Length: 322
Image 1 (cartoon, helix red, strand yellow):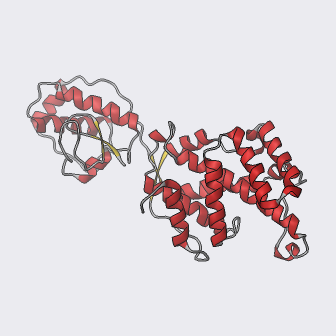
Image 2 (cartoon, rainbow, N blue to C red):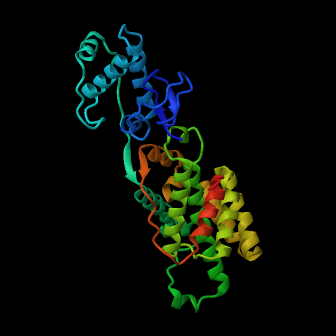
């Protein structure tokens, strides 16, 4: 839900075009003005600061309310040039009231709109980095990341391929869970501007890129695997997450591969994750997401999978009703 400033009382409200619960006033009647004073254009702190200006004007002797509203727009035209589109011809009464009022100093921080596909590509890139790094595989006893095309896979033992595929898929999903957590409701996320719909779309876009690049092999079974893995890792803290990895390794690979999976989990738990990039910094991701507003439609890059099934998975992850 969009957070916006009520230009009549100075309180924050939900929805730029919605009625204010504090004073009962609705929109200004000018959509561009209403949206300009929402978190589509500036940070929550800036909206609160501008709210103080509205309240300061309301406490002045300016009458009627319409004059106070135009005095605020005059203040914006002078102090925040470019925020509102067009030139305003302010009446003399507004000009004189504006000059009479002494305004408190405030700081305005504008938000940056970013194409949602750029957000998706950035997040997909840092997720994929986990499996292309040799350090990730060295934690599990490999000298470097396995590099096998379809031809050489034919001559590799199935048992070894299953282990490599499991490690790759699990590392990807652990990183994906970090991204999901950064987008979820938390202390960090409360300041972010990713709506429920956009969180679902971003997750869909990430999975689209992973399937298209063949980092993940699409199938109905893989979708179920991903959903189960997300639920397994999602609410486990960093110390318990590796226990989940060991347990899943035992279930999927059997006891024979357990020592190697357990060794990798121990390495990941023991050593600094920032050094080998196996656990993403959720708070840093949330800060990055707070710095920009994703806009636009997701450009799906492939038709080689059921989009409807993937979207339904994403909706279930975030509890969306769509």
